[in-house]
Length: 174
Image 1 (tube, rainbow, N blue to C red):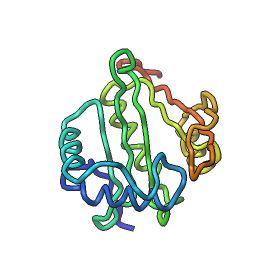
Image 2: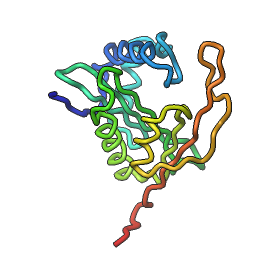
Image 3: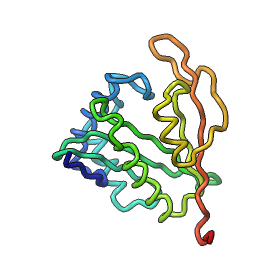
């Protein structure tokens, strides 16, 4: 497999939106379904262009032979929460269990460390054992279970809230 991890650019907008519709249709683990996200190509391209030099937000893509097969993003929270970032990730079903999530998470953690993030937050379906295993492998800890966090086809689905504490900038452990 010839896979790369690269920063998303505005030229990825159309393919990225198509990828999101694909993964939304493949799994009920995401906050959206087959409809994808409610953005057009122009709006998505503008958003991705804005990220190009950001120290607050990052989107990375896993690509195989130029095709998007996974994405991960980190977004700094505002104001008094600016030391925290909200993390999300997805991998196309055909590529699950191949280490792609780990490669994407590595890229996010590198960016977080370089840009002064102290805490990364995420939400994951409580029954998504594979994702929870990945997060725990990286040191994420469960804060609580949020009952009825999602509604999927009319059914309430619980989610675990998890976080990872990073070493504050300048704090080096020997």
